[in-house]
Image 1: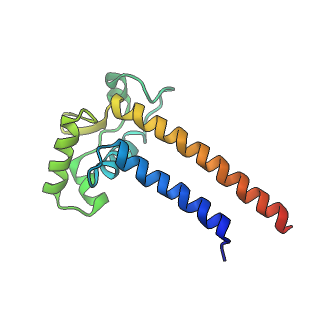
Image 2 (image 1 turned 90 degrees about the vertical axis):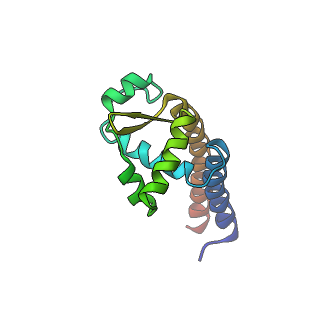
Image 3 (image 1 turned 135 degrees about the vertical axis):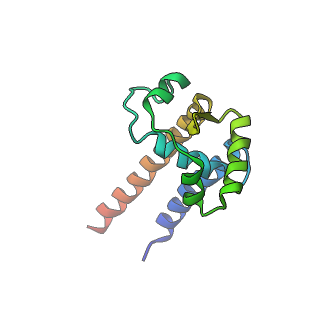
Length: 137
């Protein structure tokens, strides 16, 4: 059974993931999830050193996603996914080129800051777990 200190630390970590995503990426339902799905597909073949490269470089080296992948990933109707993707395109968080979807440099920059925050939370969580393993030994 998980102790209270671990429970709180993990809840704090998970809350950071969700609250920061929702706050930073528009406060709209499904925006963070859509962006993460597209980014995940984009990065499968991405080999550049810097994820915050310009959009042209990113698009030329990343795999493009599509509306169907988003709809399947979120179990949403295709039309709902299309509308939400159009909203994200209008916010310049997604780029559509030749029917393929890519996360923009604008979004990748914001997301990198969020990932850095998560890395710090993971380090704290790891130290807490290590400390408790030592105490349990």
